Length: 128
Image 1: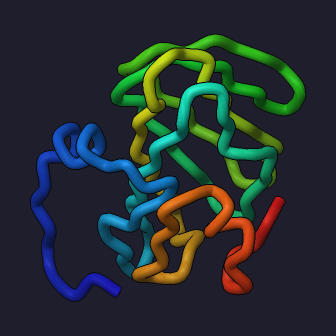
Image 2 (image 1 turned 60 degrees about the vertical axis):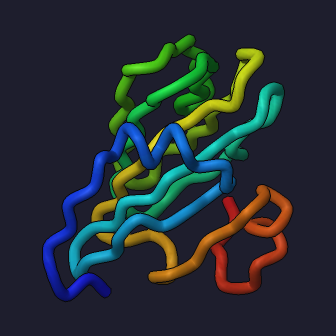
Image 3 (image 1 turned 90 degrees about the vertical axis):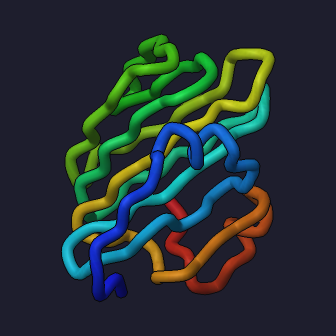
């Protein structure tokens, strides 16, 4: 858990990230995580018990929210209320780079996954 303030250039670290999921900071009431989704890949359908805000920094894709499909571009933000089924697909030619804020935290502090397969096989992760 974060015990002090943190100041980062979120756009720069998001663009530089090549990990599927990489924690930036976890506090008592929220968590910031970077993600990189390869061309043609997706995050995977899921619903969280916490609110989630996603900000797309590079790339284009499709958001699937409660079975409705919507296109998005870099610079777009999505707020996903707790319990909402969702998925995000990279429909572009370059990796999709985003940062997401969970409130409260969703993942174990310090948990990072280089690939989607790593995340899927992590016994500490909740899937779906």
